[in-house]
Length: 116
View 1 (cartoon, rainbow, N blue to C red):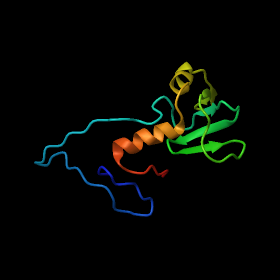
View 2: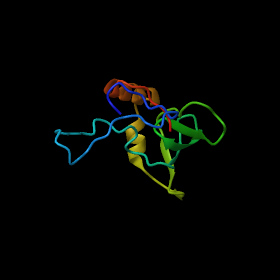
View 3: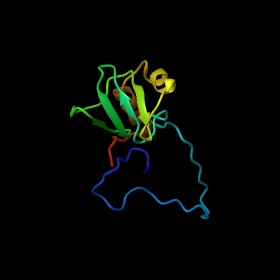
View 4: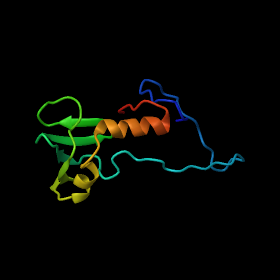
């Protein structure tokens, strides 16, 4: 996707094509990866004691039927279906919020987040 262009799950053709063997110079760099300390499917408990599954940076599943996103800090409960202990998750979420992660992503991309 180009800067300022938001993903639209209803569109089949979007974004741009890069031809690695083409004549145009191409460079890319990862500016920001939301929730780099989590893996898809990780289960966490939030500051309120509610359990959530991380499905995508913009998509969280609440085991108790809540809507929205977890309240930071987060504690990792399970990874890959196995109990897990990850101090990194607590350390990375001791300050800030999901809203702050979204705001940083928006400022870098100029687009709106959208769960696939």
